[in-house]
Image (cartoon, rainbow, N blue to C red; front, side):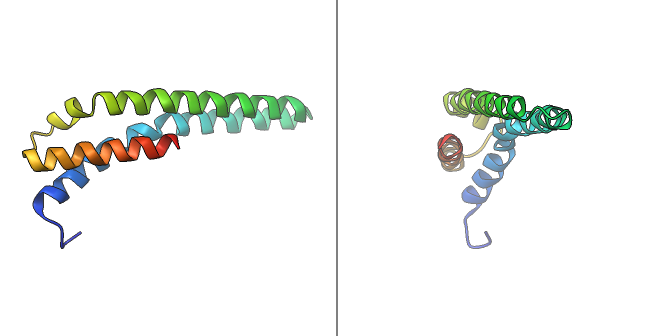
Length: 105
């Protein structure tokens, strides 16, 4: 990091501040899935636990696509909130695009 220029460091910081919003749905669904699946296993309903796990994972991926698409579409707005230089803003938009696309894959 120390060999990068100021614009690169600023872009990395902005992208690092915005990236956690992409993880929110996964964290929420993961916490909910732990409770639901544990309750089903606790009463011996393994088939129902598997059904709910698949459902919640599918919902998680659907929400991830929506959040990543929103981040890609409005990345210019979010980056503009930080009042970066043109070069840093360009790099930050590129980092957000790359991270959002990688999250979906």
